[in-house]
Image 1 (tube, rainbow, N blue to C red):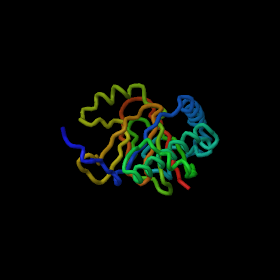
Image 2: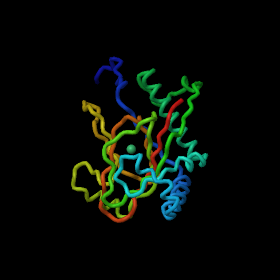
Image 3: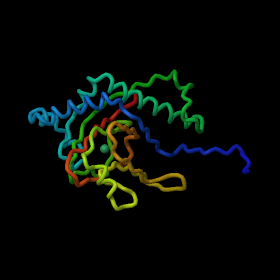
Image 4: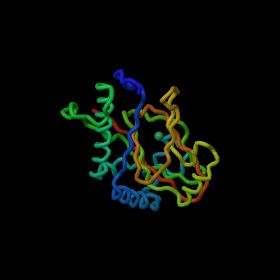
Length: 220
Ligand SMILES: [Fe+2]
């Protein structure tokens, strides 16, 4: 048996990504509201946010006001961003133990919703490599995938399937650290990351809409 030697993995430099699951009710109500926007030409045009974004995407509509007006959605975003901050700080302070945030409980962190928008992607749409400016965290909630998406994803001939996927990119590679991380869109799943982290979304070919919500957050 290998002696313990007090060995411990210390990883202060790895950017961390938080994964969570949004309540199904939030996903349903967001989809209902966005469906109504997409069906109303005037409101869709008024909310068009495409000129501010990197995406080559059919519809990008700003929904910051809608997010702020949904207390359960705002609370979900605040909770995940706060917990991410506490856990990351705790990792740095204690060289580990992701779950123990007790000593940081007294710190009051205010999370601010800067901008939020929804991307409706259809066959051929994509989001080139980019990062988000003017915020501390960025996040995504997957709201809809095309009906035939699972079959198309499974048929992807590449070793690392990327059809319709989000990919994070970091510049270094090392033992125990990836420089590419692929996230398959699953309805209800949510990811939060440092806003400087490069990412992109690959296209798909099938019929239907891939819908996601993105939000930029600040920590005060
Ligand atoms: Fe993005």
